[in-house]
Image (cartoon, rainbow over all chains, first blue to last red):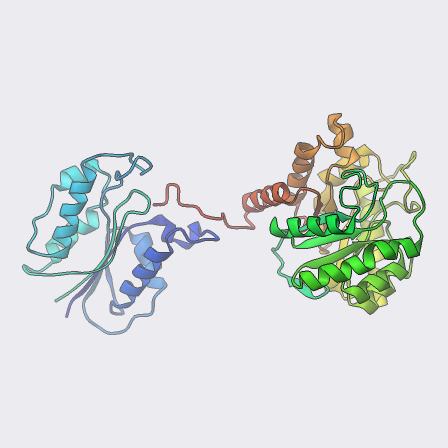
Length: 156
Length: 287
């Protein structure tokens, strides 16, 4: 059985950027829990730094083919977001979230996603990896800092 | 090395705010605002709420003035220490005294630290600290008599003198039985020093930190700040915080202060700049 996990490429997850109070505690917990579900050997799709840290921080077992995808939705969801507010971001993220969740939904334009500062390289490769019919388990779905994050898992 | 202040221990990277609580009618900064015991107790409650880890209770102002007998000093501080001890078990209680008999009495009442601002004027104070299980602050005053102002004192090298004298004091304290982890040194800005001396001690504080003993600095609203900026008591906060920042960058561990909140912010900021403390909560650019 193939196992796949999606996490956002949030630099605040890295030890080099630790704070006294973790600004992404809930996200971190979801990431670590999901990545722990992967097998020992994991192929990384997307930002290697965040992936390497999460893999180092987890104990995993088993030999199933495993993938860790790093990517997230738009970074333009609020006025304080890194890319300021772009009104198109909410519809884009809703469509992307639906497409990640189920093969019943269609993918939004990745070209628009680039305009909205979405991190899509890993998700683009995930799209090619997913089987014709799939459903994900959504462990985290929020935008605490104006950036759309998901932690999702797939298996088939 | 762990810092042990009486009942309390702190890790190597901890910085501590020591809030001044005067049981005096005439101290230079507050002019008797906490002379009444209940007012002093309110001050303790306030500084605890503001995050002070230590209170430094004093019954005699540092400047010259009416002589205060041992009995009077004890009357001002001993029962008060007991009251604070009972109300705040996790608070470090320091008492600013040079007298061994007062030191012994306050240790029995619950004090954790004897802050000898007058540099060992009473040689038996170290015995009181050792017997009472208290830490001791070893200050440098250049050998002046307690409650006198400096008058034409000069040093070949004020920093070397401060290091030599405080380390000699530390050795006496350890010989008397005070554990090394409970010995703190203090260059004592303005005590036996003119403004130029205090500025140089601030500039070269790293040399005291390099001794390995935790360093306490008492800078708050002092005359060297006032003379440097030509400002009266009450207008010296910015200057105090500038000196605080320099001492923090050098690695001072304990800050004896009137203004707890402002000093804590200054020290935390500098400690983080120095790479010794994480930011409280950083997300900007890292989302």
